[in-house]
Structure formats: structure tokens, C-alpha cells
Length: 349
Image 1 (cartoon, rainbow, N blue to C red):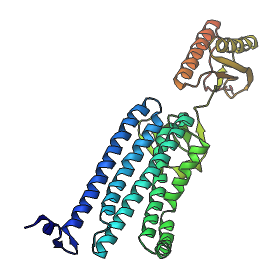
Image 2: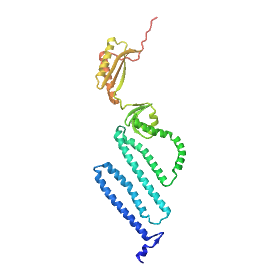
Image 3: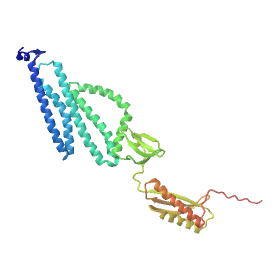
Image 4: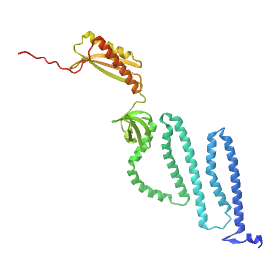
């Protein structure tokens, strides 16, 4: 059989020659795309040493664009073939889907990388990396939703009708998810307003502990007793929070009582002893020391001072040293601490 006759043989609605030409065009196009990819890859290796950010962007662009180019070359090579209309529509829909997917992926990746670097640089004190993971989840959801809507619109789907149907169901979903949306909104409130950050020690209502993780819906706190407390973000932003991280000093109010048998001179001496013991400790700032009044069973002394430490254990160490010093000084001066007593006078009849 003559080779020319073989090329003219019909398969379907196309000759072998048409199939061969289409295959040759497709193979040539794929070779050119592969060569261009190799050249771009070599350029990226050289660029990476000078501009790592641009190199990552070009690498991302290459990974997203090359599948579209390969699939587009396949469709281009088959443009002269007589193919079923349904097959052509399916191929065009596939190309649109691949292109939309890759473009949406580039937009999500580029915007995510930019915002992630911004959060990490500008919000280091808030552990920006952890926050950005939650924020970018929401951002990617929005971007991919828009990409799907764009694809459906290009495939001929009536988006208005779809959105109208979703809107009716969306009302019910919104009503059912009010709490979740409220916690999500307050998640952003916590980030931008920063009432507390991770690793802060806070007190809210009857709970005290260290912030372990701030999530999209809940915040996890490690209490002093060791258990993990999980609170909704909404309840935190609507509560009164005491944040101890930015505390520069701790105020201490000390109350003492000496017996009524203590003379006036010794009471004055007791006031001086308390003042001396407070001033004798490092990182203390005295406010006042006074004999404030007469109690039921004691002469009351009161001292107010500041400990210039934020660490709770160090503050307690300082208070302990002050207490030991007062005890020893009172004992050496013969000043007795008071405790609740009653004196009964019995009248002889």
C-alpha cells in the first residue's frame, strides 16, 4: 500500500494526515514550552542569589502558567481537526478551569505571602505568624470563592440565579452562625486593638492564666492550676480584662497590729522599723507608713509601697524578706504583734 494512501485514510471525520499534522504541531509546541521552562529555571537560579522574592514569584508563575500552556498547545494543534462539538466544549471548559485555578492560586499565594511578611514584621509582639495563619485562611476562602464564581460565569452558568438561591439559604445560615461570625469578628478586634497577646498573663472574670493561643473562634488560657481554659473571643472582648504584662510595678498594702500595751514611743519606733525594712530592699519605692488607728484588739499600722518588679515570684520574695526583717526587729525591740483577744473584768460583789 502506498504511504500517501495511508495518510489519506479516514478515521472518523479526519484523515491520518490531519492527525499527524496536529500531533506534530502539538509536539513542537510542547518542546518549545519545555525549552523555555529550562531557560527560565536557569534564570531563576541566577536570580535567586540577588532577589529571592522575585525568584519565588517567577517560580510560582512558571508552575502555574506551564500547565495552561501545555493544555492550550494541545487545543491549538487540534484546531483544524473536525471533532465533536461536545468534545470541543468540554476541552474549552477544561482550559478555562485550569486557567482559572492557576490564576486564582497565584493571586492567593502572592497576597498571602505579602500579608504574611507584613504581619510578621509589624506584629512581632503578637506572634504575627500565628495570627496570619488564621487571617489568611479567611482571605484564601474569599479569593477562591471569587475564582469559582468567575469560572461558573465563563461556563455560562446564571450566577444571578445561583446567588439569589444562595441568598435565601444564606439568611438561615447566617442566623444559625451568628455566634461563630461574632467570634470571628472579635478575632480581628483582638488583633487590631491588642487588649492582650500570646504569652500575656491576664485575669478575666473568675479566670487567671497565660494566653497560649488565640484562634479564630476561641482563645486558650493556661491557668495557674495547670488546666486549659477555652473561652470564646466574644466573651473576652465583652469582659473586663486585667493584663499584667505591661505592669511596671506592683503596689503592696501592708497592715500590722501591735498590742495595746505598746507605749507611744515604741509605736513610733514600730513605724520607723517598717519604713526602714521596706527601704532596705532593692526595687522598692515607699509611699507611706502610718499609725492609722485603734482597732478592737490592736494598734493598727499601715504601709503602702511599690515593688518595681513584674515577676510575681520575685515580688513575693521581696515581701518575704520585708516580713522577716520586721519580725526580727520587733522582737529585738520588745514590740509584740497583736492578735484577737478579749479582756474580761470581773466585779466583786
